[in-house]
Each structure stands twice: as C-alpha cells, then as structure tokens.
Image (cartoon, rainbow, N blue to C red):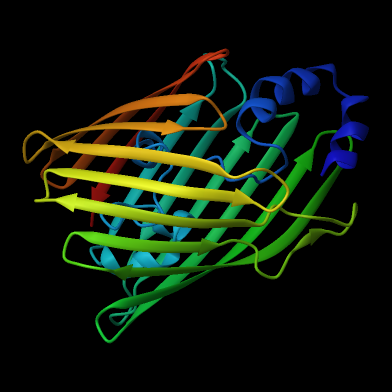
Length: 279
C-alpha cells in the first residue's frame, strides 16, 4: 500500500496529517488489524481466545458458535480527540436454522480517505471441543480525487478449550493473500495465537501473540473484572502501539452499553462507545 499512499499525498495536504496521527502509531498499511468495538478495544484487542463477546467475526470466527443469541451492535470510535477521521461499525449476529452467522461492516476514514471492511462468517464445533470458523472479507478503499480499489480475503479461526477455564485460539487472516489490483500489493496477513483464562466468571485474563508477516511480533493483553451482574470493568495494553486502555460495561436487560478510553503515550486520548441490543 505504500506506493498507493505516496501518490495520494501529493493531492491532499490533509492526507499527510491523517497518516501521521493514525497509521504511524497504530498500523502500517491499509486495513491493518487495529480493532473494532468498545469492549474488544478495552481489552487491548486481545480477543482471539475470548469467547464471551461480540465481534468474533472480526477477531476469530471460530468463536461465533460460542455466542448463539441474536444481537445487533453499533459502535463509534474517535482518534486522539480529532473530529475526523473516525471509525463506525455495525454488527449483526443471528443463527439461521441453528447455523451461527455473523456479519460486520466497519467504516474508517473521512471524505479524503475511506476504508470499508465487510465481513461475513460462520463456525462449527467438532466433538463439542474444537471450534472452526471462517469469514469472507470484502475490502473497499477510496481516496478522493485519486482512485478506488476492491479486494476480497479469507480468514480462518480455531478455538479449543484446554480446560473448563483455559481456552486457546488461533487466527490467520487473508490466507488467500489478496491484493489491490491497481497497485499489485498484498493486504496485511496476520497470525495470532491467543489464550484466555476465566476465573469463576468474575475475572478473565486474555493474552495474544500477534504477528503481521511484514513487521515484528506484538503482544496484546487484557483483564476483565465483573464487579456485579450488570457492571464490568476492563483494562488492556498493546505493546507496539504503546497504548493503555480502560473500559466500562453496563448491562440493562436486553441492552448493553460499553465505553472505552485509549491512551497513547505521545498522541493522547482516543474514545470508543458501543450499544448492543439482544434480539
């Protein structure tokens, strides 16, 4: 993607600011794995083995089967106090004839630069232990006054409970190595190995070893504290991006509200909110 970006910088001065603030600190190329949803972001994006929340179609499609209740979730994320760019998301999870299905649409950017990511996934369980998942991903990139690009990728996920409390997960993104044809450059391919430990449903520890094939290994970790049935606190840490996170979750009958603050050691605060409705 670097050649594509360099060409575009000449057309829009604001484009340089966008990538300086966003891409230099959180990702290195278009459609990098920067996370989505207030709950996952609060846990430092350490979600590959986490089987208790939404957005499994993004983090590990094998975990779609763990959350069988129908739900819809809307999310919003701002970056470093700026009004633009921002990230919005819509997630719908609904089983069809006992087959778990999830679809997620993520929109990142502004009128100058925009990424749209559409993911559709499902999963199954083998011998009530090993969960296997697949998601089909459509990537759309638009840069004003320059060009648009479209590509499709396949993600594979695996989840296995080593015990009643300890779960392991694996994610491989873009196994087909998709490219944007106009620049003939591959989209990021990521390998993630994750662990999740659940202590009596009140404390959950998550840790991911994250590796983009083009960059050094990264570590992400999170902890969830369930204070009451309706109130949850979350904390997270991302190593390479030097980001600490803290979030609050509140459940009121069929509604669930999540709010997260992310602190970068140089760029400052970002915020994310999500609203979920059980259907």
